[in-house]
Image (cartoon, rainbow, N blue to C red; front, side, top):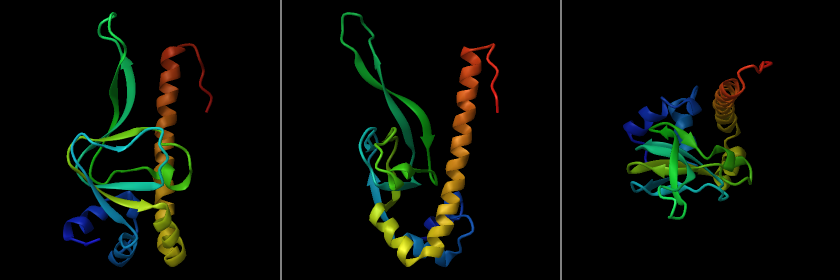
Length: 172
C-alpha cells in the first residue's frame, strides 16, 4: 500500500494506531490491502461470514439493517433499510468477523465512493507471526475501542429499558 502524506495523517488520527510511530504504521499497512466501493454499493451484508476488518480511508458509509414496511395494505411487505449509524474517514468495522466465524451482525452501505484499508484473517495471522509487537499494540487499541462500543451499547439498552419500564430499577 502506497503511503501518502494523506494516509499517514489519517492513520495518526485513528485510535487503533494510538502509540504507533511512522515505521510501525508503515509495517502494519504492509499487511493490508485496499478496496474501493461505489456509492450505494453494499460493502458487507448482514448474515454473511466475513474475515476482514475495514478502516475507512475516504468516504462515508452507513450501518444499516433491513426493515419491512407496507405502505399500502393491499401490497406485500417491502424491504427497506434503517440507518443505525454513519461511518466516515478513520472509522472501522468488521472487527468481529476478523476473530470469529459468526455471521455479520449488520450491513454496511457506501453512501459515497468509499475507499477502505482491509486486514484479512490470513494477513492478521502473518502480522501476529512476523510483527508480534506491532500486533500486540494494535490488539490493545482495538480492545479499548471495542470496550468503548460495548459500554455505549449497554447505556443505550439501559435507556431503552428505563423508557419502556418506568418503574424498573437498573442495577449496576
